[in-house]
Length: 102
Picture 1 (cartoon, rainbow, N blue to C red):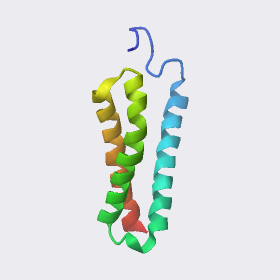
Picture 2: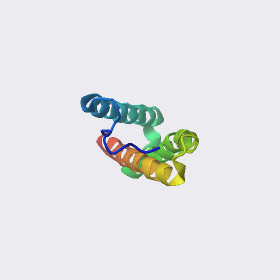
Picture 3: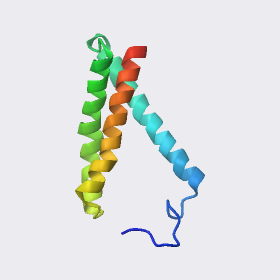
C-alpha cells in the first residue's frame, strides 16, 4: 500500500506534472466556488456567508465523493479525514475571500 524505500514520491509521475496537476485542480475548485457564489448573488452578504458555502461544498462534495475512493483503496478513515480536512478548510477560506472581494 505504501511506497518502497527506493520509490520516489508521486510514483512514476514527474514532479512538475504532479504539482502542476495539483495547482490546476485547486484552481478549478476555487473557480467552481466562485461560480456558485456568483449564482447565489445577493444571498451572499458577508465573508461568513461565503465561508459557509465553501464549507458546505467541501463537506458535501469533496468529502462525500472522496470517502468511497479512500475506503476502497484501503487507506482507512484517518487518511480520508486528513485529506478532506484540507479541502474543507481551503474551500471555506476561499469562500470567505471570494465573498469579501466581490
